Image 1 (tube, helix red, strand yellow):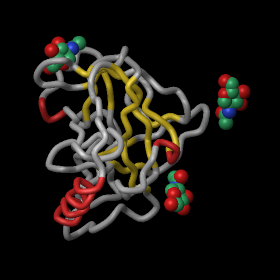
Image 2 (cartoon, protein in one colour; image 1 turned 120 degrees about the vertical axis):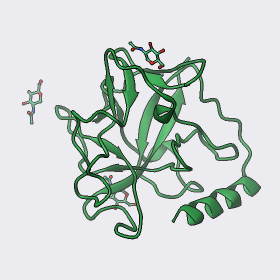
Image 3 (cartoon, protein in one colour; image 1 turned 60 degrees about the vertical axis):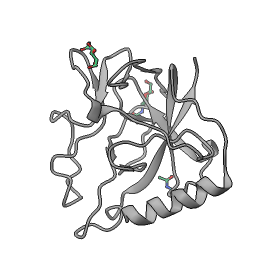
Image 4 (cartoon, helix red, strand yellow; image 1 turned 120 degrees about the horizontal axis):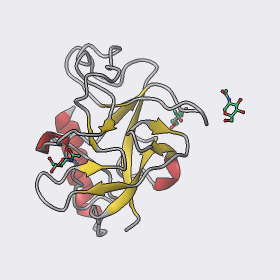
Length: 176
Ligand SMILES: *[C@@H]1O[C@H](CO)[C@@H](O)[C@H](O)[C@H]1NC(C)=O
Ligand SMILES: *[C@@H]1O[C@H](CO)[C@@H](O)[C@H](O)[C@H]1NC(C)=O
Ligand SMILES: *[C@@H]1O[C@H](CO)[C@@H](O)[C@H](O)[C@H]1NC(C)=O
């Protein structure tokens, strides 16, 4: 799977070369796509709110730290996938310690919380860890209720997104 993604990315490097700017402040949109070559901002199904939860339209401003570890924060605090107070992705055999993205006060982010973009893609899609550019959602938020967004995890026991979940991408729309 990792190799497949890498091969796909390499194929895209050859065809696209649009500047990306993942810096300053921006909003993070959740894009319903598994394909970098066809994903566009129009495929947005929501965005992340100030707590880092998947929201229908309550899109927060995220600010990227200009220095190491270059992590993201909102008005609530630093954001991370490591907060064990958040729901774990228990539908995935690898997900018992994979927690919903969450921004919280008094939390010092580390480099494992940082995102990066991949040069050559058409849009600034946020990747993290070891070339992991996908995320996992189970339910779509309504106007009143937010939903968790997890990292996308796979391996021999779970070779694609868990049944009933949707594989998505995070798109950075720079605002400042
Ligand atoms: C995502 O897009 C697929 C079609 O590509 C559609 O079948 C599915 O319902 C969409 N899921 C969500 C959560 O919008
Ligand atoms: C957020 O994380 C950064 C990087 O570790 C740290 O410098 C900053 O103090 C943290 N902010 C809070 C409120 O903990
Ligand atoms: C959502 O919130 C609005 C106003 O805050 C309220 O009128 C409506 O009943 C709520 N809907 C649900 C499903 O809770």
